[in-house]
Image 1 (cartoon, rainbow, N blue to C red):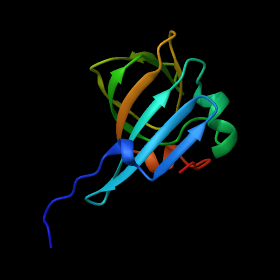
Image 2 (image 1 turned 180 degrees about the horizontal axis):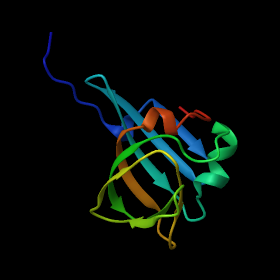
Image 3 (image 1 turned 180 degrees about the vertical axis):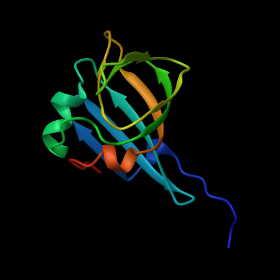
Image 4 (image 1 turned 90 degrees about the horizontal axis):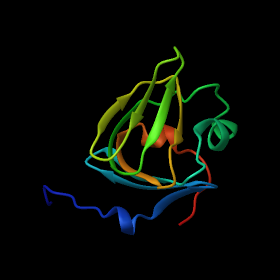
Length: 122
């Protein structure tokens, strides 16, 4: 039995699509890794909140941002931007939206399964 695993996000059989987003998921070594592409106009409270039916995003996120930028608004009022080259840990209790015209593209290391329940497109 091999001691290694290799998966390619571009060949993912599990893809979640939303009006302004695409999330490609792979399972690797017991974890879920996701590549997300959030288009201009994406906002968690508009695009995901109606699906998960919580007031704020309750998923924790550990992410690396490849390109684009998005802004996070925490429940306590704190705001911060996450952009290219940033590695971010975002705790539960937040909203987020794309800033600017460029899609925000990143890799999610935890929380992907919680945050991506929704329509499937294989």
